Figure 1: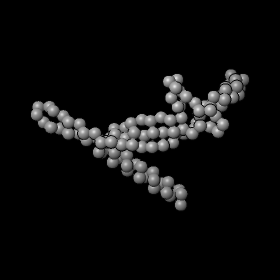
Figure 2: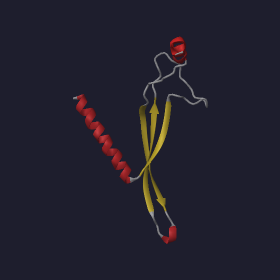
Figure 3: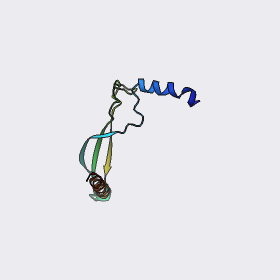
Figure 4: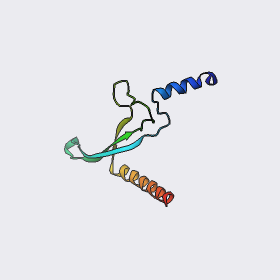
Length: 108
C-alpha cells in the first residue's frame, strides 16, 4: 500500500507545510516562585516551588505557509509549564550542566 500511495501522501503533507521530524527549539524560558502555605492543626507548613514555562518554536519548512491548529493558533509555537521542588530543580541543573560540558567538548 505504501508503495502505491506513499508518494501522494508525502506530496500532500509537503503542500500543507507538515513538519514531521522537525525538532522544536527552545524560544524562551520564564520562571516564578510559588509559596504554598499549609494550615493543618495550627502548623504553618511552607512549601516553596519554582515554576518554569518553556516556550518552544518549530521552524516552518522553506516555502511552506504558516500552519494553524484546529483552534486557529499558530501550530509552530507551543509552551508548557513545569513545577520544581528544590531537589528536583538541582537534579535538572546537574543534568543540564553535564549536557553543556558534552556540547563544549564536541565544539572544541
